[in-house]
Image (cartoon, rainbow, N blue to C red; front, side, top):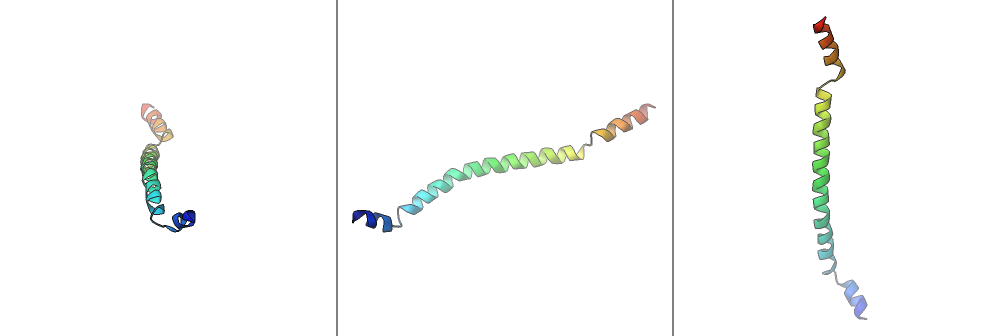
Length: 62
């Protein structure tokens, strides 16, 4: 009957849940940083068109 008492205790479960949240937060921070870096690189690539400068350079040379 000691097992049902341990199961009914809610004090042991929240610390385990908090540990899980603490373990997940660094991963979330890393993913957030990776996504932010990806978005920065993506916006930088969108801001610099690759084909148009070549055509303008050839037009300037002619």
